[in-house]
Length: 337
Ligand code: NAD
Ligand code: ISE
Image 1: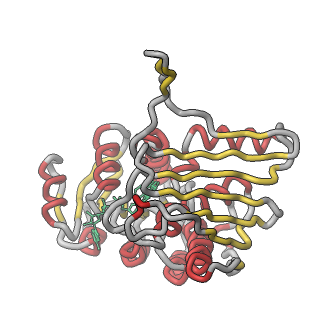
Image 2: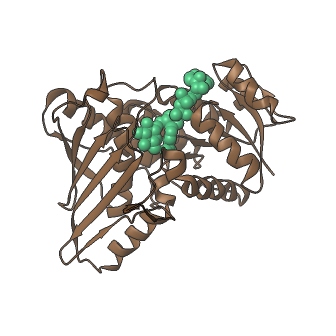
């Protein structure tokens, strides 16, 4: 039984604790912590035997914790990932790995110095059945060489910690990771186009068009809308030389009634990616039980996404096209995940 300690008992922390305690196999949540002590206590009260720690560092040092899940806000990830690496413990870090290129580079360097892969990053779209089916079609050659992809990333609303640049660093970072994985190529340049502002967006610049250029010449456009009210809607369509392939409509039910054809739309990411998170965390648990390394998105993938995300932030601030360049990939990450 893998004993996991969870740092951050907010929305996704509680959701991962629910799946680790009620859905998945081979795992127990033995410790939790949160800067909001009451939030951590509320969670632990419903989990007999689970310890509440006063800090993430204390939780990581706990001998009753074999592996760590970091579910706190992005800017806090680096300190905990580095502490887990220093303790030699496997660590699942929710996306983003860290919010800047420099922070991710320090994590990569620490893991390389440790000499063994310990870090997995929570880019769960790689585990989603629809994205996996889309990748299989593209890889099969059925639509010919992929030339473009249209994406939409729509949230009905976003949390209080969300800032103007979070549209790139917290939201579009999923598309950054997804296209690297789906096309098997790095992003070489980005641009951000700013359309008329939504009145739902408050202080945010919402929506945005994010454009990514890939090493092989394909172009990706991502519409980012984070206050669109009607639902959580994730779309993607790859345009090939001879055809197209798109994510399907994911609702298991279609209702015909009263002269209307209706398909329910998820209300948030927990619904839309429910199974993907289950598969992601179960595979992480199983890889650790098998002696590691973790097989999912690595610290290198987290670093690469952060470099592109930093470029996106610069593009948003300046209105310019910004080129992306990665440091040489260390040998530890040569097996592409
Ligand atoms: P949230 O605000 O609901 O929860 C974050 C929790 O972390 C809060 O309870 C907060 O008190 C706690 N926290 C903040 N700083 C801390 C610190 N230094 N130490 C310990 N606890 C701390 O936010 P959320 O929506 O759960 O997001 C958390 C992380 O998960 C973010 O990095 C976010 O990008 C990521 N996330 C990923 C997905 C996904 O689809 N993979 C979905 C949602 C959130
Ligand atoms: C959130 O942190 C997530 O990761 C969700 O998957 C994403 O859709 C949302 O925009 C982010 O804020």
